[in-house]
Image (cartoon, rainbow, N blue to C red; front, side, top):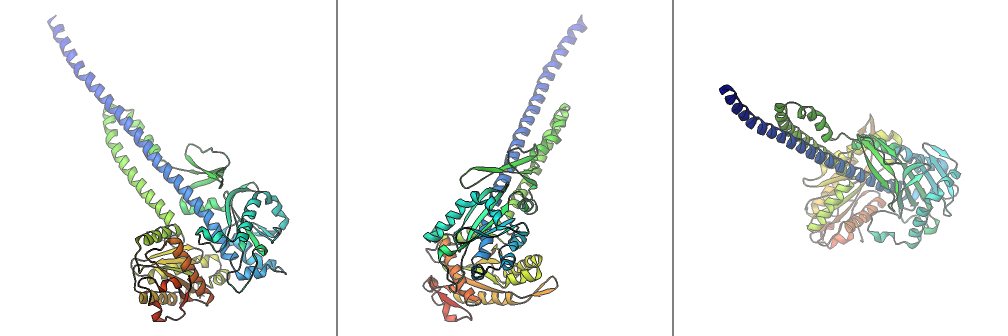
Amino acid sequence: MSKRRSYLPDSRRWLAVAVPAGLAILLIGGLACLLLAMSVRQANDLVIQRDRNLAASVLQQALQSIARDQESVTAWDEAVLHLRDPIDLDWLDDNIGLWMNMYFGHERIVVLDPQDRPIYATIGNERVDPATYQEIAPVVRPMIAAVRRALIADDWRSTGSDDRSPGAKDILVIGGHPAMVGVKPVVPSTAKVRQAPQDAYLHLAVHYLDGSFLKELQQHYLFKDARFSWQDSPKADELSYGVVDKQGRSVGFLIWKVQLPGQILTARMAPALLGTLLAILLVVAVLVAGLRKGARALRASEARARHLAYHDVLTGLPNRACFNERLASACAAGAPGTSLMLLDLDRFKQVNDTLGHPAGDALIRAVGARLRQAAPDGATVARLGGDEFAILTPRMAPAHVATLCETIIAAIGQPFEIHGAEADVGVSIGVAAIGRAATPDVMIRRADRALYRAKRAGGGFSVAGDDLSDDGFADIWDLDPPGAESIAA
């Protein structure tokens, strides 16, 4: 009996220790599971939000680029002249039709006469019967009417846009395909050619969201296995982004595969959490390490996404979005002496048509490199699209601005060795100085006018006339640099 009485107290003491210890371990395991679940959800939510924001940004930039792509061939004296009787269809193929498919990837082009009758059409890389336009006419008719109204009213310049002509763009369903659609009038680029607004031809471009655009998402923005769906039906390892038109009506969904860090952590940690009590404690340590690794990977991924969203893929230079933000900051600071330079390559299209599009891309990269080398420290060199570049200089004396323009013109004027051939291009520059009350829209318009004057003069650089009275820039013309002219703002 004595042994029995001595055993019971020992048993109770063991239970008194084991039960609280077991409960404590279970509590630790439960807290670890809760921590894991919360961390998984937070990490997943960050990745999901980041990817969807990037998808929205890429889609918006692609829609904006349609107008710029079209303006490169529609705001052009030659296009206006070649659309007058007799119409040269072969010229249209090489410059505003099939060429748009080869260079920009636009899958469908239609040209409408002043009465909105189709006179030219392409689908893919083939010229087709203009009557095929009737298939899509009911869908695009509101956009056509909007552009016609803007041409007649002539009030589109008051919007503050840097566009050279009115236009319309939207996301529609074209021939059973979700598509970005742009409409632009064919207008003169100089005063040498006259055209009444009601006599303008219209250029309609279509870029399918379920075509080459998906390849761009995969190659340039790392959207794995991107696809388009009419329904919001992503698989377990996929994300979706709803595509809407300008009225907010649903068009469909972009869907792509995503590897969520939380799913990876759960798959690796769950077996350990279900193991022995010692394994539960080990999981906590592994979880902390895994979360740190996931956070580093997430930060790196976010940095990569930010870089892609604010840099041009072809040249690595800041893109239009990045440049607009820096210009806005410079205008807000109101620092006199800061200058905006808009640059446009001369004879680039001839080089591109002669040597091919890969050579044209190589030339754009080489031009970007020379501009970076010529620009002073602290300057922002950006590619705005096509063969257009921009430079935002730090505070510089007028003489240095003129010298910088001459340096750039000389650098770009040197022949380029492209794919075993010599390419010869030039550059025209429009300059505007940032005053105390400047705004980004005003600065771009002034520099664009100066660029227009430089282009019309056959190259060189021009300074906006307003800058003759801006602080610190009144004596810029004392230098009398070759090729420089002043224009009235």
